[in-house]
Image 1 (tube, helix red, strand yellow):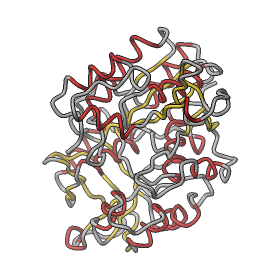
Image 2 (cartoon, one colour):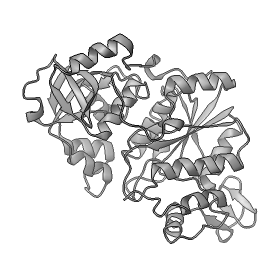
Image 3 (cartoon, helix red, strand yellow):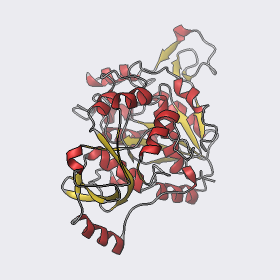
Length: 382
């Protein structure tokens, strides 16, 4: 069977019908707080159950527990704090217990019951979540630029930000129905913020050898400069799946979620989120959710050992390379040949080639995928 939702219950806080109409009316009368796209995306992930069991932004008790112990106060594993930051002036007329309307781009997006208002130590947050306070780390820089107070409480979604990827957007309720319709009892999920190269394809197909289906789940949301644009990732995966996978063994679904670049902590977070979508297995990559040299290449694997109660099986598949002697992709466990026969599939090198307008060799990237990327004048986030 598909996995049980994290915490035992799939959260759904999307207001519809008369209740939505009533909340829209209330949004005109209660204090207003404007939020940016990243917090609007957090609201979507909470409301549609991607962040189950969260029903809103963390209150202080849960925030401290997640920060220090990587668990919610009730001991449920949770590794990335999901918080709403505000300036004191923005909530000068708001007290704990009040309702406020969260606005995005001039429109009400959610109602929130303010259960708690509290301060936070942003440097301590950065050190514990990212294991560094170096401002060159994109997650640290984001954290230190956030506002001085946090507010926690339940939310109800009443509108959604525009979605340019509606055709590939599936939420947990939908993927779970789809997996059941296909008769999949075991599903491996693959998190990505990149276009696929042969190494990615290798680990995906390795996972498919012992699961019923594969959920390719590219992250669509804020990413750092130099990452691939969302539309490029989606189109590249469509090309790969159409040309190199059997029919009906892969579901491609975009996930609107922000990257944090928190390495091991975020790897566990990514697994929890995919568990909520129904996945039973999660592929943990080399330097998963890492950036620069802040984390060891397989450090995330060790952290999973601290969560025997996670409820989703991590798949630890070694980094693949191309072996000239084997004539194909291999890993250290499958290839006996010395290093001179092995060619590392470097994502950095592939990016450099694509920036120059060069098509990477076929042992690095499928030609159909490279052609998709190269048709864009600039496929990267600026």
